[in-house]
Structures are given as structure tokens and as C-alpha cells.
Amino acid sequence: MAPDDTYDPRRAEKLVEMLRALAERIVALDGEGRLLGESSSLLRALGDIRSELFTYEVRHTFDAPEVAEHRRIVEDAARGWSPDAAPEPDEEDPWQKPDGR
Image 1: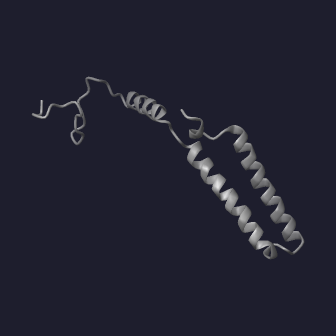
Image 2: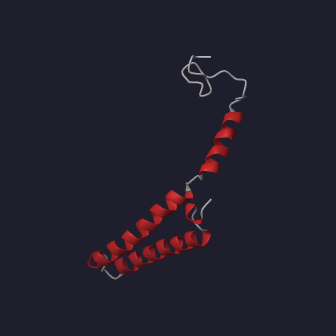
Image 3: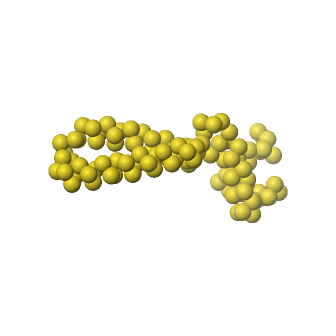
């Protein structure tokens, strides 16, 4: 698995800090009555955080091909699949010969 395929725990901690800092800033600006007056800087901060949140979501839920294959094998075993099991009626047998045997 390549290093870019997962989301580093230190990076996740930084994202949490970014979210908390934004929340604190919003509360402070609101208390000062300047919340809407700082809309452009808030939009920039929201854009940066949105981008990082998207990266987190994609990387956090990413399965490397090997992991996905292992997950598929485990799920097949959990459903009771075995190499001798016949394919479902609507499922093609990928090992079937072109003549149907």
C-alpha cells in the first residue's frame, strides 16, 4: 500500500485542530459581532478545511486492491461460499468454457 493511500494519524490530528480552531474563531467573531464582516476570511478557511475533510474521507475509507480482495474473500467465506459451490442462477461462472461446460 502506498503512503498516499491512507490518511496519517498525525494528519488527522491536524485536521481536528483545524476544525476546532475554526469553531473557536466563529464563536469569537460572533461574540464580537463581526461574524458576517469576516465572511471572506471564513470562506477561505472553510475551503481549506473542506479540501482536507474530503481528502480524509477518501483516504480514510480507501481500500487498497489487496485489502479489497481480502475483504471479498472473507465476505464470500462468511456467506458460505466454497470452490465447489455452483454459481447463482443469475451469476455467470467466470471459469466456464465458451461452449458452456
